[in-house]
Image (cartoon, rainbow, N blue to C red; front, side):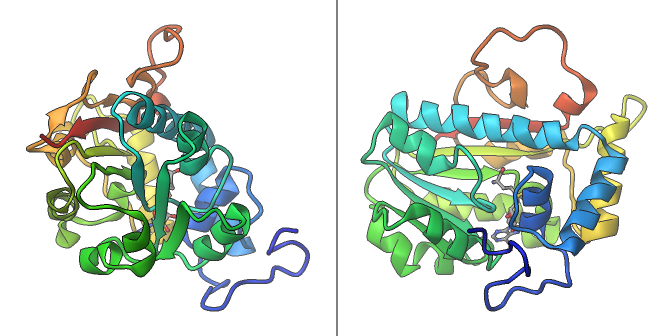
Length: 275
Ligand code: SAM
């Protein structure tokens, strides 16, 4: 049974009157773990950019290809998924454990809905945990007993920051945060990230401008960054082919049918390896 079905029951600590990014994301993906306030924001985002749902599925598909790459090709056997969101189909651990059942995964999200839902879904799989934490508190995340129990810091880690970094303003120093995580992890670790691309100036993507403005208006967050700023998240790491690209261009399962649509150019992402 869905925890929110019928009477919209919420776990302790969940404010059902204020929209949350995790639940708006869930509503856009067709999930049930959201409330009326979240669905109202989802509608406004869809009004601003009707392809926003396709964009989120495109991002989920990127996660699938990246995790498959990390496990099958890069030999990573432990993953930390920052800003994981509410569990949905083809979660990080589903893809990873399909490739190798021994892979350990720790989901990290600030939203208190995520942990109980993930726990219910995981049904006692000891290799996987979900923790409620703020990614900006690196020590709290990396020192969390559930993470420490599963992640061996002497072995390579796959760090996922997918669909997260555009929610962190420059004052939180997201570049410094990513570096702090990667500094702790062993050589052979990988960073996989996707984030919203800003395209200011005459060639601006109007969908980017509309989406950023609507995120700011509804959620008070949304910091789209230039290609240079996004590339800087991977500074000091060895890029994995094909580098930092629009998501559909990252190792597509099939040849792309033609030029990308403007909505497909809203997110940039890639993977890089720590030497
Ligand atoms: N990674 C998933 C994906 O790409 O499909 C979910 C992305 S969702 C847009 C962003 C998630 O980041 C939300 O679940 C939100 O709660 C979480 N988040 C935002 N700020 C965070 C923070 N400071 N610490 C931890 N999680 C955060």
